[in-house]
Image: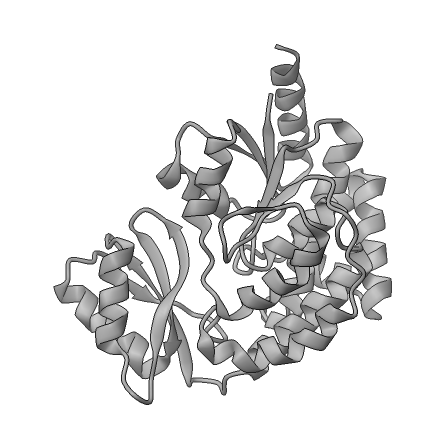
Length: 316
């Protein structure tokens, strides 16, 4: 059996995430202890108890999501010996995938993504940028719509290519709203502006990319134990020296998630595990490829059920 490991990004967070994993699995508890020590504050308490408004702050959300995903992974590894053929993470989740592959140290990663969150939030003044989900349009239609909505002073681009008929656009607030109006007449259904703190994965994030360059340059990147599909290329990376350039490009580049998941299918992977809070990636996979099953490792119950199911499948 070939398995894939998947890691969610920002937006999956919720108060209480990781709490029962830490209670029931020493390996998960150790992850939160290491994250707390690396950051110098109780990230674990923020995950377990909130408050939600603090957890939603990008500089907190990013390390909290990563720590919860890796806590789930370590707990899973303590229950089940299955290793993945490939891994992928959505946006921020690419850092989690790289920790899983052994390329990045957990402590280094939580510090890096906290700074990533801070820089992304600071890159664009509040209210200046926006993001919106467009439903029912293909990529060519979205590209044409973004070109029409953009102007000399305001831009909007495809940001998250999540699934067939689900593409998120990002850019200046005025251009995003023009794109939404154009989408209404262009056949999109249920398109909506998103409640986000900044316009991620677009050229407005250039200051964050510049700020992250020295942060990522300081990271020790080790050999990857398995391939990680990079967001910006939708291709498998197995080379340690490509990790930092790909992470830098990701800040301003599009998340090519649909293509990335099709890479899993082409590799013969039919079983995947989504590590951490929420089941966003499972929902996207149902739109991308129903032949690939996404099992949850969100809490103790789902994690144990997934470990048992995969162990059984591996023996068949």
